[in-house]
Length: 158
Image (cartoon, rainbow, N blue to C red; front, side, top):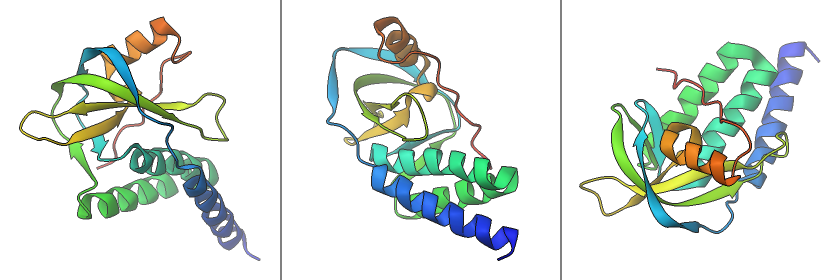
C-alpha cells in the first residue's frame, strides 16, 4: 500500500475515533458570569461537540498529514458546520458574558478541553467557544485550577 493511501486510511480511522469521543460533560454554571472579549476570527458553535470535532480532528490531521492536510480538513469541516447553521466565524472581537462551561476529553491530550458558553447580543441562543478564544475566562480558569496551562488556539485558516 502506498504511503499517501495508508496515511489517509489511518487518518480516517483516527477521525472516526475522535467522533466517538465527542461527548461533552454536563454544563457547569459559573457562580458569577465572567465578562470576556471573544477574540476576532473565533469559531462559535451551537454545541461544544462541533468545536471538538473541528479543532481536535484538525490537530490530528496536522500531526498525520501536515499543514496542507490540516488546512483542507479545517476548511471542509468549517464549511459543513457553517452550511448547517451550526457554527460561524465571529470576525470581530466582541464582549460576552461567559455563564457556563463544559469539558471534553481527547485521549491524545493529557488534560480535558474546556469550552465556554455565552449569549450574543441580539440572539436568544447560547453559543460555545474554546476557552483559548475567551481570554478573561481562561485567566479565571487558570487561577481557579480548572485549566493547568494556557490553551494554544490555532489561527482560523481562511
